[in-house]
Length: 299
Image 1 (cartoon, helix red, strand yellow):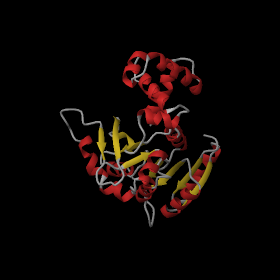
Image 2 (cartoon, rainbow, N blue to C red):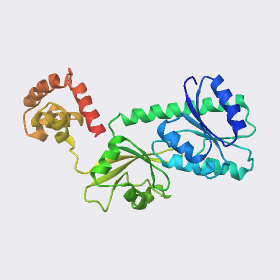
Image 3 (cartoon, rainbow, N blue to C red):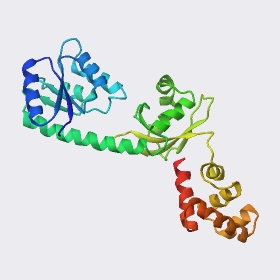
């Protein structure tokens, strides 16, 4: 855990001193806040890797502080561990519902605290790695909660939403109603693609997977996007006719079948392939089809 940044939020000087000493001995960098609003300000300026948060504080308690942290997309992924003298089950539930990942009762045992922090820091790193991979994948992906709220999206998805003139207010007021059928119990699998209504710019949502936690993974589809041979022609260094041949090859057609579809001779199809291979940097039709299929799948 060396060089991890920890924000400790507590209005008790004694508690702060105990926790600070334990964390510094573990090689961690410690930030301190005495109340909720100060914690929010510090988190925006210096993003901590984890937050240790007292539940009961003056002005703004830990529950409200945690909710505000989770409402901010830039800080929502920071794991929050609650610390409090409260032991009632309702208080534990309240902390978890506010967005906390764990709950420790005072007096804090430093060894237990460090052990739990290791678990949540490791989980946060794995989640961040997965999200970074998705963010850099170039795909238009969104995750929705059971209530139809957008929890996460790739930069490309948010850019496409902005292109269609969709803001946070639209997402909150209209999206939940349009996707509610995907969450309702049904005898048969729901339609995999949903066209969003009430927009001047055409957008569709493709249902990819319902995850174990009840969240829905979707792909956002640009209604004005290029498809098939047009997309291959625009994205690859091939001619219009070559893109048509490549499109049908990627769909598993033989040279003779492609020739019949495009009304040309099999020999002409083969000549087009001979031009396509060096342009794509491949040696055979299987590799060329693979290039096309990856591009078509990504878009």
